[in-house]
Image: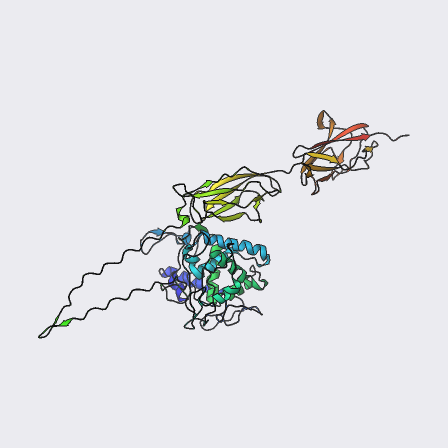
Length: 567
């Protein structure tokens, strides 16, 4: 845990606090886990029986490769500012550490949504993926990914050559890790090739399973953690899943500390601006972290020219050489498509209106544009449904991310209205940039009927003080189709020209037996049928009217006759 103390030490007070934090983390290790003298989990601990495909001799998804050991700040509701050691600028460490790059965060949440649908019993929280992503790769090196979620350069762990690490000989002929001799952990979630071969997933729908793509890697990690029918809401099962990912109690404690930190709150930051860890389980504090990008070999220095002996002793200095021209400064990295976006424009989105339970006929479409108002391709646009509504995009999600095409246009999936009526908002934003978004108002109108008919032509008659033998049953349609779940009202009215409630004649009964002549909150069933409660008659005789109205304008008036029985 030396790296942890090196990370937290900022004076005597903070050192004492760090000691308490480390002790708390040590106490949180998995129940029943045994460790060796170095605090590593003993082989086989917390491994379910029949655990095939463990990922190589090193075990786990990563081959037990090194990982970042930085601990999260001791978060408070208002993080205390501290001075930067290099610039002296006051920064809020807690706020910075809680920021997760936009595309990386999107990948974690999409993976959670997919697992919620395919393995609902696993109860995978996206914050667990974020914790593992932080510990394995510093959130894809601070979010250095393109619009599709692929890292700009591979993130590789050290060679697993048995020299301080597990010994895992090459299994992929260097296809994933570029090493034909030994395997190396690859990508934002640090899968070794032999594990990725069976655990890899296509998380961004491009038809490929790429360990260097954060969408693919996050989904694969989610499925890996959810194996063996685990329920991650049970702490012991979550601990077993984390230890199966990397077989170390210290790793477990570090991941759990970040999980708890992220559960207290996170926020989205632009891609490429995430904070980078600095301590590794394979190094002293301040040494190079474990996952690295491939290094560029340095140019060997030119040996110095020996001095020439002078006649008669001594030596002459070598003839001075002209200075070697300095290498040209590296050209700046060209901006990513996302960085060139200046604003979003509407792309001819029509009026967004639908009846409850039906699909909207119009889709939200936007165009990502540069300052010159040119469309920008390969930019991720996030569409989010906001407001008190049960409307969703096709597939049941309230968030959808779409990559802009060649003209810079992104079209959201079709909206499907729920049962809640009224207005809600669809917001379009650029993933990875802090830019103003576009808001669209969508309206869900109540289900409608334009026609009501009785399902029977039997006359409705009754004697004074009696009850009608037949109940009134109606069927609602809209444009000839069944109108199910349509709201209706039934009122016993005074006359065809006077729709006010009658004060005599037939009536309904409330649950407590009281007389009632207006029924509200009626709804047709799925087949458009509405069956009214029993009707009763008072002492008045004659022909009375029952009027039924539905949303959409359907009206039907039914005659009710009350007459004394024939002698």
